[in-house]
Image (cartoon, rainbow, N blue to C red; front, side, top):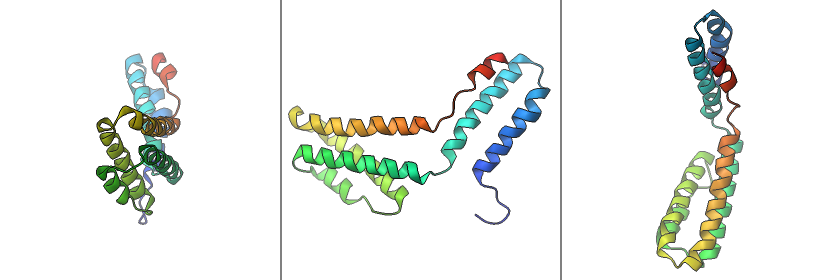
Amino acid sequence: MSAGHLPLERLVDGVLHTLRTVVAPALDDRYARGQLFAVLDLLHNLRERIAIRPELLAAEAESAAEALDAAVMALGSVPPPLAAALAAVPAEPLAARVAALRAAVVAAFTVLPSLPSAVAAPAHAALAAHLGGQAMRDVAVLKPSLLEEISKG
């Protein structure tokens, strides 16, 4: 980051603070206040998604790699599209690793329908467990809703 540039998270924090402490008290109209609090809610949650959080990427990479390992074990052999996707997964940088692991998960799901269900089911279960865990990690960074403030107007 060059001198004179604010991190995006800090900029969002400043906007949130100004909207909450300067704009909101000046609004008398319930509808306008409700709209303002909806924007605050959106910005509040967006702030957590702006920054790349290495700990979240690392957790996703670990989970995806474990799920793919379990899927490969369940399949017994690796279908060529999945083998190619797995071969393309780099060790570093972390963001590239996660992107490639996501592509490998998609490749794994793509080949499963062509396999006997007895073979595909355990692989599908491992991949689905990863996706369920990832959904929870994604939701965990969201902040509580400002719905109560929005409804007050």
